[in-house]
Length: 199
Ligand code: AMP
Image (tube, rainbow, N blue to C red; front, side, top):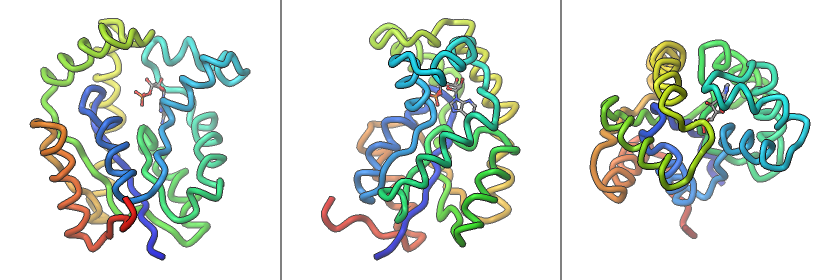
């Protein structure tokens, strides 16, 4: 049984949610998306949801301790024991350290970090389309621009850390959904990561 531990990184509107789901399915691993977990809690009105609603609506980052607590709880579930695809965490260098400590404690590490490369203009266009169709409460124009700024300032630097570990695959995120998925799968297979035979 092989394990595949992946992280997908890209600015909002890069398609990382869509591609992450496709890649997780192909490799037979669960997606662990902090944004989805926060949104589900907000929708259900849990204490966590109440705590993070204003922060996520403004496009700010939820404090690291709160975010890491939900990630750790999710990664400790049995279905994530043999691999997972992280989407949305880590989002800054401090969160990389928290994840390293957690995975290192189990003798694990990320096998690959997929960077979806999409120009800012294209990301902005895709998010405003999503805002029209999904009506996410954090997809206001101000929050979108703020999230992209945070990505550039806080999240892009995590790639430098992972580059030193030679685990980053930078994928051109412009093209059809199928083309982009095929590019990612080719990069992961080139690392010797095997797709799930049943998928
Ligand atoms: P996403 O769906 O990944 O864009 O996440 C939606 C929102 O959830 C973000 O704008 C943040 O407010 C919050 N969030 C998601 N992941 C994290 C994280 N790793 N650290 C802090 N805040 C996060």
